[in-house]
Image 1 (cartoon, helix red, strand yellow):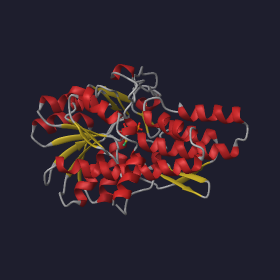
Image 2: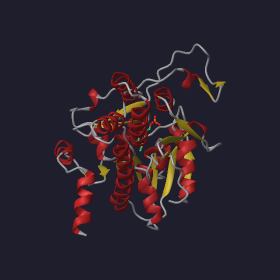
Image 3: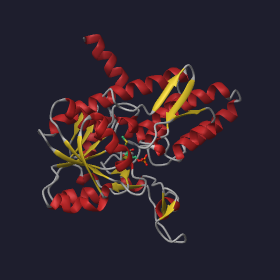
Length: 343
Ligand code: MRU
């Protein structure tokens, strides 16, 4: 994992992020100093991926607390960061956790450290699901730069690669912003994972022709019944996987589960600018006045998910029960401290 890119850096009170919009062409870090910087980085997807957004926002709140002495102005700034994107629940979760802590900087660092250990646990919990040389289709980007750690869904494939299982990643390009083509393929290369890139529309024939053994994706928000919001196109993949009797897995940390909502109908779905669909890299790919529907996420019904891979282990159906059990588990930090005490 030494070749992994680092999405977020924090040192001596300075917050930097990798501008993921420039990948794979350029690796450039920018500094986030103000509320506008933090909100813009999240809203424009320079910083993206549900857990990574949470880690970045956590540091962002700590930075803002230092520069913004006025309590009301600070609260307004924190509220803006908290709502910079609506779907990934990790964002609000991380902001609330830092705001409630007596030492905000320490809490942000703890959230980041925990993310690494959570990702490592997700990786090792997911590896036994895959045989040697498994051909695994994945969508969007869920690698180290999407979590500010080791990755969730792609983290499982990276862990399988490190375990000598030589998985083959089938990478959906992921229209319209090409997180698969630009980011996942790059992260596969850096992790030494053999990969094939395909357009999103190729998934059906790839499955029909026996080229896919399993599907693994990440998540932005999971309801109590297992309904899962993830990058647009995920729901279509889940239906295709069910049709072809291919297991469909979701890898996500506990912080992506929203225990307050009963079903995916309650998940707010971000709709993004029409320009993302009408043009690409500054070039028109549709008439400039084309009417556009551009939801950034869709919701996969829980009954299409074979298992959730979490840091606490696998969750299997019925999800109303297994997710309720997850809700009652002790905080990851407490669990780790207890393990360290036992060791
Ligand atoms: O719009 P993005 O690129 O932030 O969407 C990201 C995804 O949909 C990921 O699958 C999800 O956040 C999980 S990242 C480990």
